[in-house]
Image (cartoon, rainbow, N blue to C red):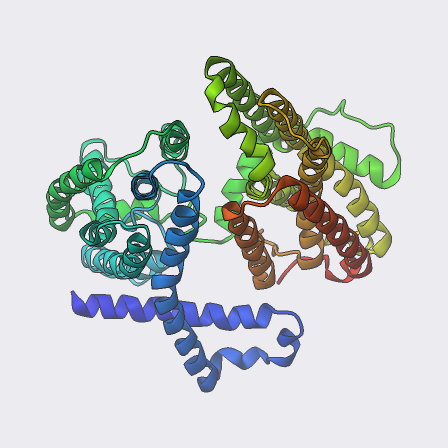
Length: 526
């Protein structure tokens, strides 16, 4: 077992080192300095190994620390309930969601594909050894943060120590009690990276219970948590025996690690599946036409034929947003005592909605559709790469992207203004205007941001794989900034003015850069 684990670890490390070198080659300016023979350089490989080991160590602690601090710690102070109970409540429901979304054992990854499919390593030994390693990293990574942050909140030390053990127990239960027995009975393996509708409904329910119940002063207390932990240990031990004794991991991974799984095999065949799914939603009606001319004509035909892809999710978002606000309005009528709490939502928690607008924005999906069904083919023609064509289409696409994303943004902005009015209003009527303008500004900002990123860092290659590390880094930074603002409580007037000003300045600068450099950068990656 140890030999198998060491071999698999070396394999994963080699892949990671090569990925680091490839990422360095993808960075602007640096790619011109570094030669193509980079992968043979011993010094750089040693450097890559050091970076890889640092990533392994940092990855063990960093994400767990951010999770405890941002996802749990910052949200604990957002409620008026007992802080210890609120912390435990958020932790339990987040753990349940995480246990369903990522079990580690059945998460199809590249290192599993390389080890089991390409190198034909023993699947059972590989699965068990790497699973225990992942569980051990999880416990070690979480332990210091649950203790440090828990003690600051006056959570008993024994409970702080039990929390990192509760997380893997839930993951083990999901695998040993549900997934493996389900495979034995139905011979069906479900890719956890592609959850079914039932799973999404379950996750949404847990999310609402986890972050919604504290607003109603309902939280899991210490006694309930201890009972849940003891139950998880009992069922976890039973599930662990099932995991260790199971001998058909080869069959499971044979189903999981196929070409249709884009997380395990990012090649032409995997993206072919995506293209086929998108193609089903394209309208091929020959009667579709446009009265416009030039770039506007070309773009309008694209929008009309891809209207289902471009608008379906946005319509759903808008309906859900309207439904949420209608529910809040009904709550106010039924329970007027909640007016003060809900009144603080638009007046204090506006920074939270940077992340909401980030989540709702369809920039990534729409630009991917643009590449797969238009630019992927058209960029092979020289005339399509001329400045006039690139900038002309950029302008038309920007208008469309902004208008599409404004639909749910308007629903939120108007809903907030009505909510503020119904819950008692505000002494400063300027708040109404600031709320509306700032939410609209956020929506426009993300629309411009994603399209400018697409044109300046065009990340896709001929097989529609993302091959630009800079694009990935910018995406990650965007996410972290938006997520960080969840924990901030800033008066609406100040935050709204600052955010609106930032969005306007950023948009103007990024549009200027896009117009100047997009004709040089908008091309298919190698």
